[in-house]
Image 1: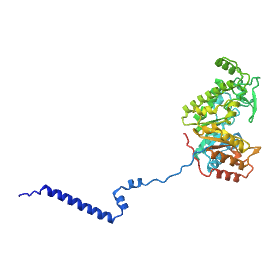
Image 2: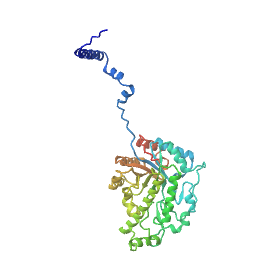
Image 3: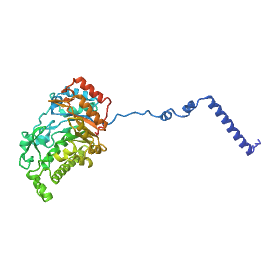
Image 4: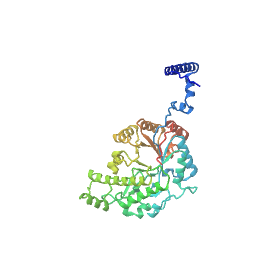
Length: 415
């Protein structure tokens, strides 16, 4: 059979004709079908959907909305149904943090081996239903999405009649005239010597016990993790000052050098305590709730601004219990507050009432709005005065808090 070969020039012509007919075919197809339909047929369904922009979801704002549960709230903490109702109510009203007292008047809220070794019997071992109070609160609060940050309210303070003070008189510091008692809002107290290694170890062990033994979200210290500037004239502290400076301690307790030396010692202890807590629970919130800075430093040797600058504080809530709005505004707009809130969550403590001094809701609302307008969170002192011990009816108070916190404000649990 004889084969007849087609010249190469013909092959090229056939190739061009084929491309021409293919182009005409595609044009007819496009004209007869919507572009979107072709796209859906040409692209797999999953890929096509992934190219559709996701709707923008507005996440809830990060804001401290806390409340302290104090010894005044003791019945609520001890009774399981009351505690559960309190936690549920706080969750319904969009609170997000509870600061329960665990160290008050020389006693702990939970069964403590550390306290027992110091010959201190826990004031309350169990709740009314036999439960571990702190463990119960943590469980119930976490179910509702609230953080629990135990509050070591008394810090270095203790009543003079407490087992702690009576069993360890060598742990106490004193004024220059030898007196050891001091009267404040907590009544008559004595002060543990914050410079004494045994005292530092005792407080540190209590804190680490709470952080390790319970699934808490952090730990909080307030204005009593400090020392009134009148104190520090005990034998140990005077000898330490002489050893380190070569001088006798000034007779004036407000002497700037003497104030600075003692404040630095407290800062060194808090630094070590922070490191110890973070070693046990790296994500624990190290919270501090002091007085406004000038009072905290000059009167109580508590240099919390340096603590923040050194990175040993994760959260700051300044107690601003002022009786009028003008002085309240003056404190929350101070430069140190503005500096701190650029770095860590910052809030203000707002008094919602005392048993013998109820606070009108209108005044509370004004303070909350003033704080939030300046980017500050809030924590209220204390739970029962939110609405149970108040000049307005309970339902009215709760409705007003609901209006203040009408949307949730989540907080990232660091667990």
